[in-house]
Length: 629
Ligand code: CUK
Ligand code: CUA
Image (tube, rainbow, N blue to C red; front, side, top):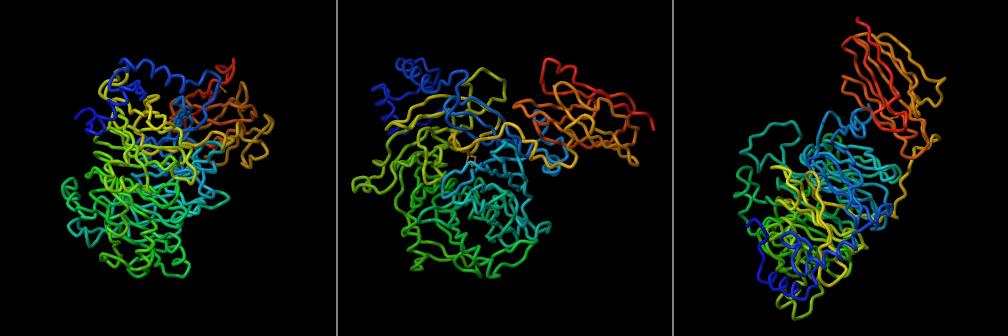
């Protein structure tokens, strides 16, 4: 079970492609030194080689899981470009050390990033923002793609716990939608017995409003749900515009031994949410205030929530680029269930329900299902290439299956295994996969990246803690072809791919834009002023000195340093590291940052520039002189 468990179909396809020499798998199951491996490796190398000085065509933003960060790489080279710290302090960029970012982190030193979501205009990536969730501490963050910096962390989100089911962006970034993974007693802070889980606990779907100009997020409205553990989601478009979908893996409402107890039912539910109706209901005053948020009870406000039966502990639920087909993967069933939103719409219109749960109508499975495609073992997530094909990740099989979306031929309808086009092994145990723009109206459709959970020795040994593996797959042909493999820190979940020319990041913060009242641009304006026990410093950095170079203080003082990097030259970054005080701020060209700390021990402490900036970088230093009290 360690490696791939191939189905007979996969085996026959594989042996066929190996015979034909058409399937590029330089990695294959091993080192890529098989007979055809060499030629494949050569063509894969050419396809992914980006010569020194040349640039990649796409950005890959992959979630860093419990590292709390976003990794950014280029495609096709897969070269790591930067790490964007989001929920975790980062001395390399000074993130979490200066006052502003420290405040944003709110005392937390980690988060669990799973699903980055790019902002959209008219159902296409507009390159403005990247939203990411924190599964652990129930927060959501916004990264600005103008400067690749985290600008806002919202949360913990009220009346809910465990933001796993986001960040799912609506077609015009009106909302980033969230569903809770964990249910808790509400209002928050209330104690209830776990044995009363079904009665006392609740889940929640939240609409996080996004200001169209600033991108500023706020909690707009919420929909109360039973204590199902909501899992993955996606937003509608085209015919499903205004709707959103999440799977649940625990409609059993188990609160212990979930491994067994949450795998009882043949079908769990997906939430089918009409978020436009929810917004209208809130406008009409149909929400009840809870912790400052209008909360909708779906039993009292019909039309906002429906349950859709989905086989066997589903994980991903993904709307295709046309907005009509919705594929869900049941982890414990070897099929992708394909639903037709057109049928869902008709069923709702005709009130063709199989029952209800706590006042929420349950759609009739048979009425809305288009078909179940036998993709293989352990299907998790599905992506689309915009050419009528779907690609599903199979965790258990360690495979990506390519299959054809409806409409199917009569022959395919009789035997949906005929809709399966290709399978490619990945190494090993894939979680998410991504095709650029799969969640938009216009996928790029050229590359697929597999985010594998286990790398199991496909790299130089790094001891018991092995890196994660991400593999780049060419999907331009009928058959998929493995191109490249790269390794990262824990732990890639979902990813986004953005065409590089969609964005034009800035290279310096323009001086004219710096409205910080403590910014200084000329050495004559720098100052050290004392008021009471506070020593306030207005300082600047420029190659290759600080002004002032000396700061005097006394034990018990609070020191506040506002440092402006007056450079307007790209990549001329200065740091301000203070010895033995756990302080290192990094200031980009044109930026002003503030750091505040108490001096508790006497002595003379050097501070110095931490970012190598010029031939005289070593000379860029000074002293904090602290007299005893
Ligand atoms: S989950 Cu990670 S493999 Cu959090 Cu999106 Cu499916
Ligand atoms: Cu400034 Cu080194």
